[in-house]
Each structure stands twice: as C-alpha cells, then as structure tokens.
Image (cartoon, rainbow, N blue to C red; front, side, top):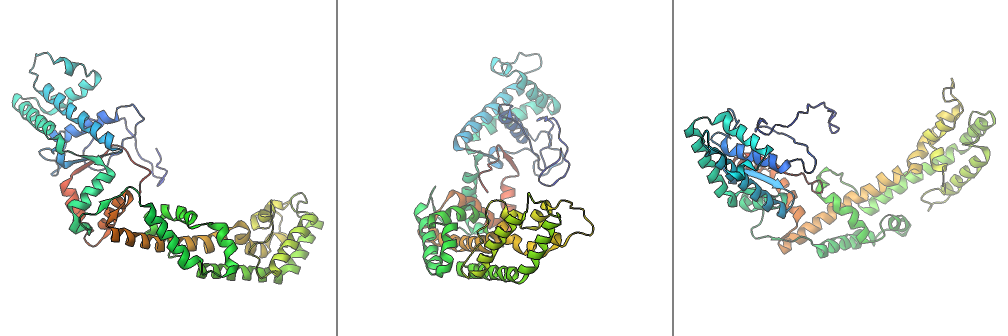
Length: 425
C-alpha cells in the first residue's frame, strides 16, 4: 500500500493482536464494529503481563494501569473503555485459574471467538502452575487498579501533563479552563480593526471591505490559523501590505501601457492569419478586452480591470496557448510568447491580490490578534481546550522540552491511541 502522505510503499498485514509487537509505532486501521476496543484490551492485558515483550527493558516485568496511557475520543468513551478493559483483565485472570481438565466458567465460555485469543496468550508463555498463578495475580491487581488507569481524552491528558509538570511546561498554577472565550476573541479582533483598519487610506477601503466585511469575518479566518502561526510568514500590516500591492498593480499598468501597441499588433495579426482560433479569441473580443485594460490602466484608483467571464483566463499564457490553432507551430507565432501575458497573469488570476494582499494581512492579523488574545487570557488566568494541546506542544519545543519529553516517556512507557481526532491540531 502506498502512503499518500510520503509516497512510500508500506507493508500491510492481517492483524494478530496476540503477536503484534508491543514496541515501536504501530498503526491499526479498522472500520466501525470490527473489534477495535477488544483489540486494544488484548494489547493492554499483554502489556500488563509483559507478554511477547522480548528484550524490551521498558516493558520488562509488565506495566500497571497508571503506566499505560490510553487516549480516546470522549469522556463517555473513557469510562466505557475503562470498564471494558477491567472486565477483560478479570476474565483473563479467571481463565488463568482454570486447571488442566477443568471446565471453564460459563461467563468465560460465553466469550466465543474472543476466548481463543485469551487461551493463546495463556498457553504461549504460561505453561506451569506457578507462572499461571503469578500472571493471574498480576491481572487481578491490574483490574483492581483500573480506577487509577491513565485512560483519558487528549485534552484531559494534556491538562494533566501541564498541571503535573508545571515547572517544565512553564504554566501558571490554578489556571481556569474555559470551553469558549468569545468575548476575549471579539475584543482582540475589534482592537485589531481599530488599530490597523480605521487608519487605512480611503483608496484601500473598498478592497478591504470586499475581503473582510467586519471584525467577526476577519476573526473567522484568523482563528483556525492561530495554532499554526509558527509556520506562517511574518505578513505585513494592512497599510504596508496594501501599499505594496498598489505598487505592484501600478507596475503592471505601466507595463500594459508600454506594450499596448505592440501586443495589439501581434494579436490582430494572429487573428487575421488564423494563428488564433477566432472562437476562443476573436477580433471583437480582443477589442473589448483590451479596451477594458486601457480604462483600468488609465485610472489611478482602479484596482482590477473589469474583465469577466473567460477573459481573465484567456489573457494569460495558458489561455493564449489554449487559443492557438496549432500549439506545435515552429517557429511559434510571437503572440504565443509575448511577455505581457505573464505580466498580467497574477493580476487576472487573483494570485497577486491573494498573496501580496490578503495573505500578508492575514498572517499579520494572526500574530497581532493571537498575541492580544494570549495576553487577555493570561490576565484572566484562563485557558481553552485548544490551549491545552498547543501549550503542551510549545512546552515540548521549549529549552526544557527534552527533559519534559523524557519525564513523560518515563511516566508512560506505552501510549495506545483509541481514535485519532482530526478536528484537533
């Protein structure tokens, strides 16, 4: 199977939860109702017993519930999983107490196909009465200890780590956890609007309000980027970014005016000599479109030419190439290689406004609003659920991060992820 993330070919195997190695990183893919929870509980009791752990020093002698981190999706799922694992540990302990020739208890026999895996674990490494008695005792101890098990949601676990390792994570003690901080978010966005938008020159106002109609609209695009701001560019303040965009637009206008007569002669010749397909770029269309470009270039305030429909595409290198009757003509007609098409392309395709305008401002807004929001939460001694994840990540990347990582690894030699949460960073 090819991994779409990195293009590498990975080997997939039919899952055998009794033989699956308990070291390294393992990914189990399964549909709903195919026994994911049962498989996880089998792996869990193997970790308790140190079954099949080989020479692993970290797993030697087995682990107890506080040492096995299990992360699942919801609080309800954590309780269900804790009960299921406790039940599986008790059932397996009961199975280990069955002497050769004895009939298995009814509740054990009722496990059906799952019973075969438990028998396989028992019979593979625990053949003597003494080893079975020791394993049974360990399983019962683990079942009794399940109330102290490290089974939680990702948010719950991050909160615990930040609290237990406050010094290494650099967190304040006693921070209050809030699901939402709408008021603080709105205040931060509105403050950005007051500081950077109200002061914009009037010539930028139309573009700005077409892009973000209000502080709330701006915040909607800023919020999902806050968790990734370390990977974003620096950006530029609105006035700076829009002045830079305006300069680039003026340069394109100047290029059009300078090359106007030459490109007109070239296009008209290509139309008359039937180099261009008149159905895609005919004389009438060219006269209309070039006239709109003339009007735009002559207006100091005009942001974009009034080209609509297929015109913005047609007047780009790809659009001209598509309009050629014979793209393989050798030598090519000058219309196919005229530099004006490449000059117009970022303007007509919108990439100029998107990259030099919108993205530059958006990245700046992410940093400014993010910093204001963090300051407000710090003053109020608040954290959100997203903060739990991002702050633990920041702590692991900090100067004390390596020590924190070793501490957590020592605390939890094994982590079992019941479900990945693709809504979280």
